[in-house]
Image 1 (cartoon, rainbow, N blue to C red):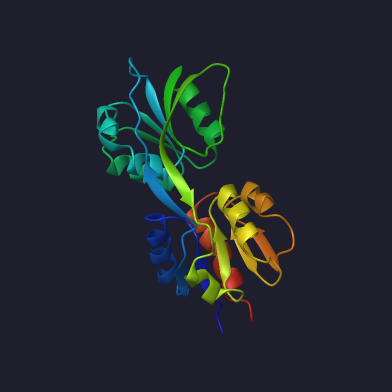
Image 2 (cartoon, rainbow, N blue to C red):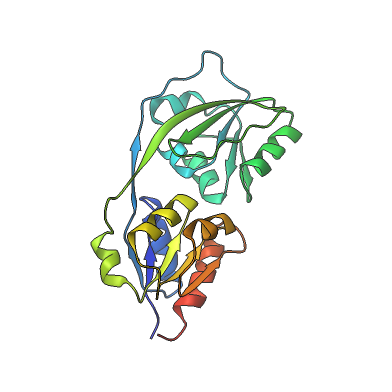
Length: 223
């Protein structure tokens, strides 16, 4: 019997992953560990040359200020972030399939020397020597205090999807890892989850498609 898949990322990403997983024939259940909350923020006095988006939530929760930036080129980490940027109105979007350093290298090759980073409250700072980064925190991902009921029902049989190092650390605090299988979106997320899991694997690339491919393999293992 196929194992259920536990999707822990916040909405609307959770529903997007559910749709993809069910299209693959997986029995997916959503139990978000975070709720996204927009924050007040101000535009810089002088507009930068470009915008850096390291999360799709930055494009989804930028508020009115975001519309004043959409004529600028956007540099997005990941396909989902790039899609969210286009939906928000950005017409020129460069997509990176690695991390923030990789997409900044792309911006550097394009001649960008000043960029506005729209970030979440919990973010990994990137400080290149040759690009001036103005960082604005525009949303917060509020963590749950207890494991959602849907997750308690699905575990330990379910394979848990970990979309970020922060989610991995929180999930590890909320459960006993023994007997649980996890699929992490990156080696960094896998490391953040720590030891003790029944099975722990990371995706070959930091994309939802790669993560779901790993998860499908784990879900199809015998119980």
